[in-house]
Length: 555
View 1 (cartoon, helix red, strand yellow):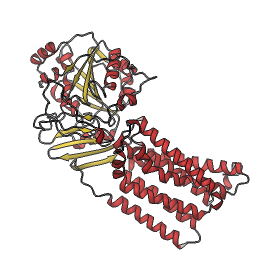
View 2: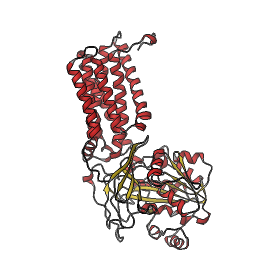
View 3: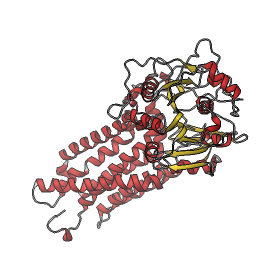
View 4: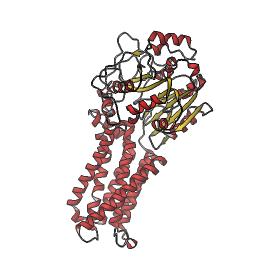
């Protein structure tokens, strides 16, 4: 690429190959995050695995390509691109099965996604690494420095285009398979172009064969029975994969493969998930529920909590939901209707609190991406911001996914410690009698309070809330031991490390009414054979529960 005469620059075939390899390699890297996240989450360890594999595969490809550069030709680069496109077809067709196979490997949580990324994306990225040294060998530039700089610039520009287009255009508009199909066709088209004007029979036939393979892979996919039920709606949003699935009379919202909300189609007002009933506990802690005017939910999901508050109380309910597609799905499939008393704000929860001037009587934090709270919503500065936006007798509730004690409880105890640092008084409630990873509700009051179970039970009897919270009040826990755990701050919030110990444990989501008599937890582990069924807490009966699926389900 001449800087002296940019108007006369005409890309050569090797230039096109380098540019396309940059577009494809970075596009696949962005796409890898969406493919891997439903099985392994989108933690720093997942993205660390993706970046590590891509860089290692490219480096190995550069090295091997450099050793073989003396044999470089446009036709060889075409075969490399066809081989890459063929492997992309395998990824499109069999990614789900390959993910399940890789997830069964007995590895520590932080390394669990590494084999999956390696199997799915190592080979095609390795092949693309050959293109740059081959193109440098074929370059018409004078001198090694000019040739290598030219190739680096074109490859980097291609990577910028691939990252930007995949992030801002392709993922919000197309499904994962369609994006893989597009990348495959780009590679096939480039490989075909590299053989022109002489149309060699073998490369031409191979190009057609790979193109057909891509179409078949994207069109039929692996035949599998979805145990979750009938897919009512599915889309890729800029933030996650969204699915609405009906199983008998229950409709469930899945985000990145994890259950986030559920609605009984026969009785839409019923709490399907037990933990959503706990959202009403703050109404026992305010001075007078009749004086509650403003309530904020951070995180919408299926909008179980916001709809319930609007229906039961004479209050104004604001909801800060980052993903507009989640809100759209809730309106189309979960009977969400905005009204004079229920307003949805498409905004990040922290940013919304910074910008609003409203003082809230109750704030509920119920924001999750698969099995993780967004890190900036766990930190002390966020908790202090919440405290500032509460009225004098305001109450804050945070839905935390963790074990209540022992292994797997580190995140809960660190989050409790952080919330307690910002608020005058802090309480916590378990939602399952099983000593397992579950929804734990941490509740904090702006005023200095000292509620006993007996006092809250009396308030439950006397206040006409439209919901009996006797069982929820009795599920209170004593203050956890937080020694040795950090207060989560902007400077130091090791949420990924704290939550790593929950992988391999059972995650129990209790369900209400006519559900199964025994909990049937499903592991959020990437290696299910390492999981063990959680044991009930001595002296407590197990509450009814239904089948669960990986990840926390914000309402």
